[in-house]
Image (cartoon, rainbow over all chains, first blue to last red; front, top):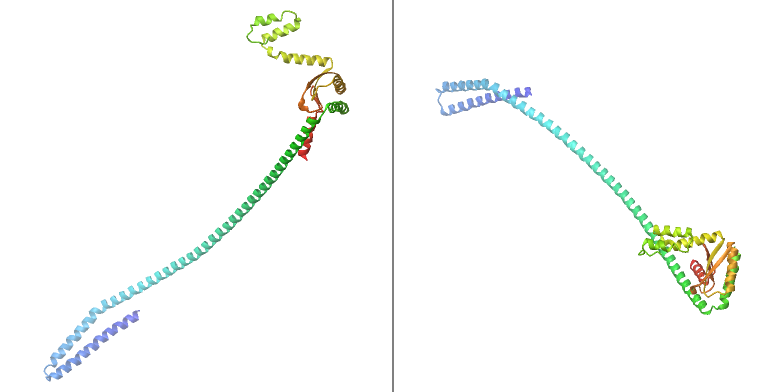
Length: 196
Length: 128
């Protein structure tokens, strides 16, 4: 950087010298076109004046210009360093966010899998409970049907027995006679003694 | 005697005529304790105790028609064989029996009625 700065300064000095030489040539040409030789002292005075002015300018302004450019270079370098650091920081942040996003994706996938598994388990549980309930209802219905059938059969048997015995009772009441009564009493006495 | 409107003196006065001393004392005690309403129960239990002492059983025999004397005697003999003691038979007519006899001796019931046989047949038919 220092070498670059030195080259810049020499360039400025060279440019000033070249400028002075050009002014000198241009002034000679102007003077020659006017055709008078009595103006040479004035010309040389002006050239000397210019050279002195330029030297003073270079001597006075050299240090502030060098400092300005050095400061400017330093500022730019600092800015570049800061920007580089910021860029690295931003890249780090970016990587961090990228990693977090990847982790979030993984977490989301894990939570979704978990919920899916829970849902499947819940579904299986509900289906099992429903099947159990259905089996119980079916068994209950079977029992109810069996009970109904048994009840209906019993009622039918009762009705048949009631009618049969009622008819038999009616016939017996109509046809039983004195001899039958006597025979029944005799049977009673015989059976009572036998039962003892 | 058990009427509550009669005064105590009147009730006790009625027991002083021809009754034995023990029985009169019992009646007076029952009058005093206001227990005249259980006199029929006391009488029945007393008769039961007397029967037990004499080894006598009382049989209540129900029949569909009126029983002849011979039938009653036959039943008495049969019941005496069952109980092993003397049996006094009291008869009554129950047409609902249709036919046959039902004898009750104490807690023992001997049922030979047609009604019960029909009920048994009906039960057998129901049970299949």
